[in-house]
Picture 1: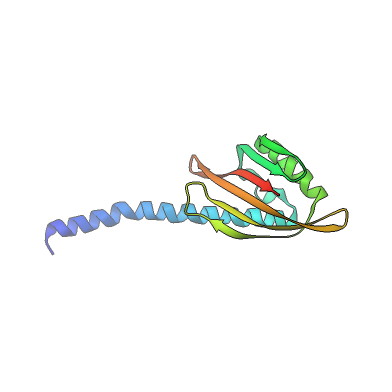
Picture 2: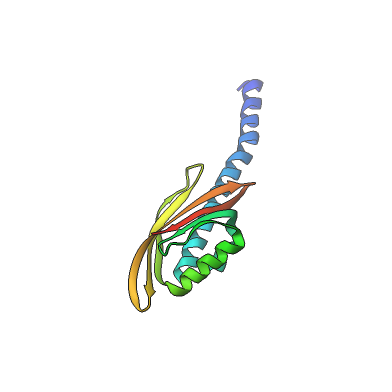
Length: 140
C-alpha cells in the first residue's frame, strides 16, 4: 500500500469516527428521551421528562386546551391533565428518529371519572443547541 493510501485511510478513520460517534450518541439520547416520555405518561409522572420541554412547547389536548406554553406552564398543563385523566397504560408504537424533527406516537389508555378511554398521543422533538427538546405534544 502506498503512503498516500495509508495517510488517506488514517485521515478518513480519524476524522469520521468522532462524527459517527456523535451521531450514534445523539440517537441514543433521543431514544432515551422517548423512553422517559413513555414512562412519564404510563405513570402520570411528568417529572420523568419535564426538563426536556422547549421554552415554547405546543400542547393540544382533547379537553380544548391548546397553545404554546413555556416549559414551566407545559409541566402544569400536563400535570393537571393527567390528574383528571389517570393513566392506565401508554406505549409508543411509532417512533421515527431518522428525521430532522423526530416524532413518536402511541395509544394512551386512561380513566376519567372511573370510565376507561383511549386517545392518541403525538410527540415531536427538536434538536436545539445539541439538546433534544419536546417541541409538541398532542393528545386526541
